[in-house]
Image 1 (tube, one colour):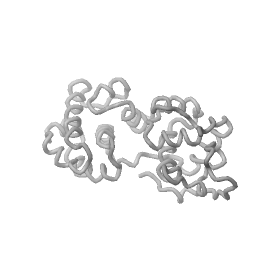
Image 2 (cartoon, one colour; image 1 turned 30 degrees about the vertical axis):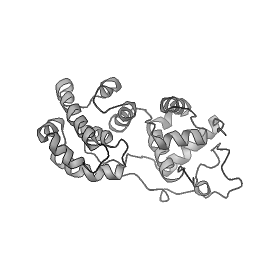
Image 3 (cartoon, helix red, strand yellow; image 1 turned 180 degrees about the horizontal axis):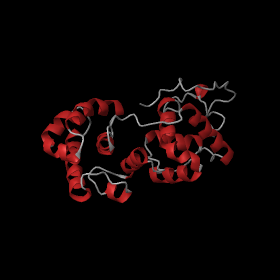
Image 4 (cartoon, helix red, strand yellow; image 1 turned 90 degrees about the vertical axis):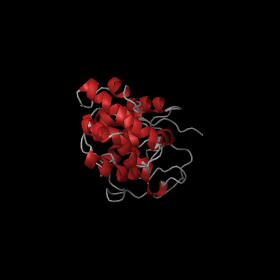
Length: 231
């Protein structure tokens, strides 16, 4: 059964609660500048942030600019990221996007969606992450967590990632749009999980319109220490 769309009042309460838990949420991917963030996000496709971080610590110690990455070469990049899924393709993409950044953008990461999506290995979701995290744009990169939370709670129902992205951004009040992406990921990763959502621990239980949520739960209000904080 599909969840009914959240009312404006519930949306306000939903975000206010999540904002109270994490005032300044950040990505769990480790990076040192916009370029290394872009590379980390490209590498994270179908991989965990933990696994990507283990691989990129050594990589970024050697190459934290497009120029240094090109000097390092595809073979060395491949050696660094071989523990990550699809590492051969991803290594090629890292070198190719680095080359285009040097040729087209003077080695800088563009703060423009169209320019980002023109880079190898960069789709809409990756562009949204970079625009949000590196440049402060109000974007929502819909991954499996956000897709699930938006549909389950009724915040932004949709059948495709793009439909969910547009629905979430339309429903989200202006003051919450900058960090909505991270709040939803945190909630989906640690509370509103796929198989057995932790409704009994959910801080936004009252706002959620999921018809399958247990009724009459005594929902504990969480503190910021109850959910792992992104570093």
